Length: 71
Image 1 (cartoon, rainbow, N blue to C red):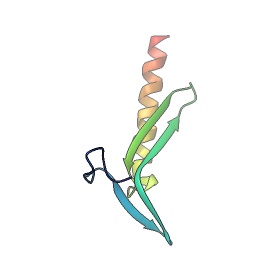
Image 2 (image 1 turned 180 degrees about the vertical axis):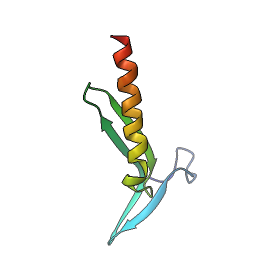
Image 3 (image 1 turned 90 degrees about the vertical axis):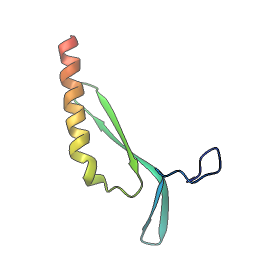
């Protein structure tokens, strides 16, 4: 829902209409690397998937680079 525990509207929650369906809340964008790294980027529902793809891929690359230095 778009309201928090104190019954107030959460400013991070957004809503958007896609065709005839309303989508409310947040979206999780998940990226998985070849070395098993997983990155989750959470955005408002109004954010298009393509808008966070570059950031998600960059975070996966950084996570894999950090993980390879540990081994």
